[in-house]
Image (cartoon, rainbow, N blue to C red):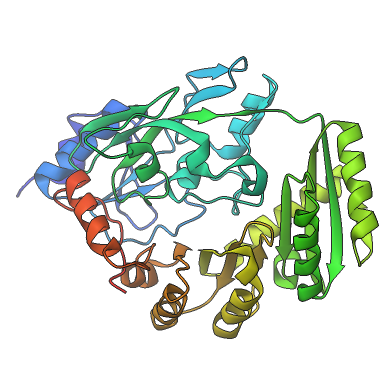
Length: 403
């Protein structure tokens, strides 16, 4: 009888790194990049299929595989530099724990993705899941200066640092952030930070959806200095109406002045939330997407956001939904099927709007892929890149949809 993956890895890894999932599948929890590389080298050579998992709170851990590699053991924070607002962090660190560590040095990573607050940094970056703060503070790609990646065949590739460098013609950092693990396993990243804001003020407007999107566009036209402007559906907030949540960060005087401008131009009553109420509101919206099997995101031009919202609600229903009327991002939670996703992708491709399946059961995402080819040639490009970084298809990641 040939040795099992557990038998082979037991001889090569320290004791305590091997266990089993609830389903009885081998679970490997490396604590260093070198150990991740060792596992992937063995998997590539033996023909094992490997599924990667962080804290297991976002993408369901239901992919068929020979072993599960958990990044939850990669929890070191080798460097935090408050002077130049950068940090080097391993990707198994929970996002809430990272924020607490950075706050001790007066710094902050301006990411507010949906999901559980204990979601790992690697999960957020691999899926490029951004929240409302991307309106002013940048996307996960823009906040990641460099990375270390273990490829599907066990190679360790490093790109960037203080600045992003290209390797073999690829901008590896931008490729890996948002690659859903198709091009390797992120083990360490260099991050761009922000100084902790002196004041954090949140205002809420409630009313009909169209009225709120018009208000958001008006606030953008008058150059409101807002950190985030987010529209949220009743299903996302647990309330009876749509709401517009506006977050102001900065000095006390600055946020007070911007709050006064909002009250002056808004055509619906404005409520100022306490810090506790604002935190609870963000948590409610963030966790609402975990109540649905599937979460989908789109990148839309602001002028087309109302029509796109109508299209999505018509096909997916009015579940948890957030939108950024000023910058165009949309996220919707739904219980849907592959046929509907393919139909939406074809419809949206005519408008050059990409549709990304952020989370879904394996049966759905293995059919649709995480990201679809909304422009000609994208599918072939992604397939070629997967072959470069994972030549044997060791990593269990859905290929791009052939739409």
